[in-house]
Amino acid sequence: MKFSTPLMSALCLLGSGWACADQVLPAPPELASGYRSGLQPVHASRHMAAAANPLASEAGRAMLRAGGSAIDAAIAMQMVLTLVEPQSSGIGGGAFILYWDGQRVQAFDGREAAPAAVTERLFLQADGSPMPFRAAQIGGRSVGVPGVLRALKLAHEQHGKLPWGNLFAPAIELARNGFPVSARLHTLIAGDPFIARSPAMARYFLDEQGRPLAVGTLLRNPALAHTFEQIAAQGPEVFYRGEIGEAIVAEVRSHANAGYLSRQDLQRYQARQREPVCGPYKAWQICGMPPPSSGGVAVLQTLGILEAVQRASPQRDLAALRPVPHASPAGLEPPPLAVHLVAEAERLAFADRAQYLADSDYVPVPLKALTDAGYLASRAKQVGEYSMKHARPGQPMGAQLALAPDRSPLRISTSHLSAVDDSGQALAMTTSVEAAFGSHLMVKGFLLNNTLTDFSFIPQEHGKPVANRVQPGKRPLSAMAPTLVFSRASGELVASLGSPGGSQIIGYVNKALVGLLDWQLDPQQAAGLPNFGSRNAGTEVEAGMASPALIRQLAAWGHEVTPMTMTSGMQIIQRNGEGWSGGADPRREGVALGD
Image: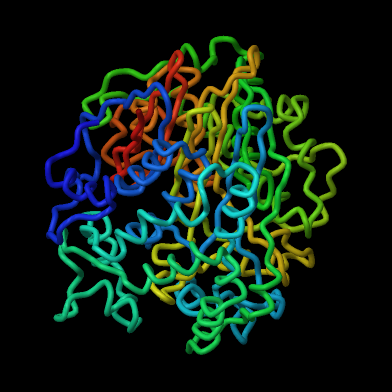
């Protein structure tokens, strides 16, 4: 990866001494379409870090160069993302972390939790109808207990090599000295009418005339620098039990759309270590997050169904349905039959997701039954020549249809980062404040999440409770799908990947896995492939990337095709011989960096 001179100037903030002279710098170049053509995979022999912003990737690589572990790199990247990509993730949100220590995969759950005082009617209006999304999102009502710091600390206690405080140095210096507003951040600020209604956000994101900060404006955040300094010195306790937590609670409860978060909620919150969900796909073992994420289960179900389809009909083997050249920015297009098969498998997975998946501490989730090979083979029989249009949930062994399906709208958000260190330890972490700019509450330089809107607004249907309904202390269902891939023959780590994109994350990860494993694409090609899939409604194809011929053929097979913007943010690190190759999604501004 070659950087432009202006971007190299921005990265000097993270070089020797961690400081640079003040200057106004242009953001990373992006095409008007938002797709950066011509990107090549990055190669490294020792270590690699990949994140959604070059400054975050550079902070991660700096920790790896200092002998840090993958979790050390992730902490440094998350803190920088809190500053430079505030619309997507930060310390006011939550995260799911998959970690490979060379012997085992661990899953760290830092998902936000509902306050103890909420009821299942949290998002219902007086007449019992669900609130409009924006009315629910903006303000304190939607704020869950942030979990990312607790999860990072839990993983660092087990796998960190560098001192906790050192990991905040890049973000502190960037917050104090400033960073250039990127084209992506500028566009998101300009498109959000609620920023002007939040005094703290308006002061930070708008100029004196109330206009969005121009691309390249040097943006400083001394309040966040001070917050980071406190957390670096005192650990997460100052966030959960100290003055930062007090400020969070005050902001949530004083807003016109007040929430229920209390100091006790913050003090009681604990990140959880859970068993990852792992399963076979052809020559590989795929590991993902368990509930309260649906990502791991849905990805395993999709791949398991596709493998069963192949066993029943060898001519439907995805490995033989390779992408073809196409005059789009990606240069490649998946063939119609591959899109058909993946979309149909995803319909079945999303039907089960809505019916069965929720926080497993509150709802009995039949994890093993949902990913059982026999069950997936029975589901695969529904994948025919024509689209089923809408799949119904199956009934895995032992599962009871005692709950109603979650029919919530499927929304889009989030960020992803991956890292591999000198010892081969690896991490995949997907992190979020939920919708763009979260709840629009800004406290001490960072934004608070609106993650409670990931619950079903409607608690019951036809007299049955919805699995993903609001309950005190419960963690809302997520589609985040950080993923680690291993060789089944050797047990060796093959790849770390994941993407933002809300409920579309599952499809983005499926597409990348098919690209990497079945089509043997390099990580940059896999990240850049046109997006496609289904969330059990229409069949979605990426606008401007799907050919008329593809759309016509899918329609002939009964698909209701919807071309749409599908702004994935994939980060991929893949083993390449004795070293690593990395790729970053060309639709956003991220990069992979390594030595």
